[in-house]
Amino acid sequence: MMVSARSPRAVRLALVAALAILGTTIAVVLVQGIESIDLPVKGVIVFAAAAVSLALAIYRPVLFPLVAYFAAVPFDNLLQTGGGTITKFLGAASALTILLVMVDRRRTITPPLAIAGWAAFLFFSIASLMWAGDPAFGMQSLLQVAELFVLYSICAMLRVRVAEVRAMLLATLLGGVAASAYGIFMYLSGHIGRTDALSQRLDISLGSGSFINADHYAGSLVFPAAIALVAFLRLNGFKRVVAGAAFVALLAGVLVSATRGSLIAIVAMGIYLAIVERRRVQLLALGGIGLLASIAMPNIWLRFLDPAQGGMGGRSGIWAIGWSAFRQHWLAGDGTGNFQLAYGESYLKTPQHGAFFHPWVMASHNLIVSTGVELGIVGVVLVLGAWALQFRAVGCIPRRSSLGDVRAAIEAGTLGLFVVAMTVDLMWYKYLWIAFMLGVLARNAWIGSERSATAGEPA
Image (cartoon, rainbow, N blue to C red; front, side, top):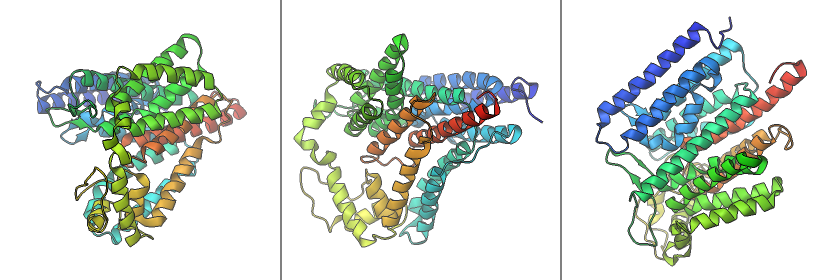
């Protein structure tokens, strides 16, 4: 029996969910204490999530609490509780809600091929524990990726409406803009990692132990920047001005982080959109505004010009050692999560050059390097194949259709995140997987709208 969106049961479920989130907020207050500087941020985010979730549970159960999850992901590390982050709880609630909707309302659809690509990569990663030097190193990252893959898989089988996908994209954009504004505020408040002019960058390290890595902070803004860019190109009038302002705000967040990889990713997205959207004048105009805005925060340009920041900030030395480690077990790698172990074994065998002297233990800072060392050439083929299938997940949407703008934003954002993956390790980060989820949900919305149009039903 189907449940009406306004039924008493739906209302009761919404109230229970809101009370659960409120209880979590109170628990955070009791654990963190009122003197924690990041507590107001947590309280505002959770209160807003509770209010939005209550409304969505009644009127749009598919969106509950998925939009709150998408919006809160940039603040993930700031939302710590005793049992995990609040975003983790929102993700679990999202998975449960979607499953209930699919069962109760039969809103299912055949998933895209991308799910098979990521499943193959995940299964090979699990299998690699059998030959890993230390399987315990890989368990934590595997569990994180597996949790995200479960939610991704559930989304891949959900039939959604076009309006619902647009609401999710809007929530992702608003969450990114809020995170950018928070980062700019923290930067202007003196949260700067170093004092010398050439190295000043955002440092969100708070007294409660919460922190956001500057590279991942900037990386979480890349996909929302793609949404804002496409909105700027496709909308008109005042809406275009708002979209342009949102993009500049997101760009400002990247600038205060002084993260060059994310800035390069945004440039790559602009070039891609200039090719597929053919609106070069608008992109050049917005890029010019962004350059003018960067005059107030030139740290990132100083890092580009600083000779001491050569070799991708020392990453080239890490990759050289990683290449040496890859050659030891080039076919199937050293086992998932064992990059640092393999890196340490090759450390003394690889001469180091330049200004950087790398410590014994380092992260790979590169998707290809980490995958190659841990999973060998087999893993590299699997991960690149999965990324390609993910990029093509929205390929069924015609560019000039009603969802053409969504396709452009998701393709540009997926490309941008791949560029980010060349300088940071992000496979187990939520901001990557929400981009993947939006890709499969947009694809499902288009297929569902086509079927509805054929059957004469509303999309």
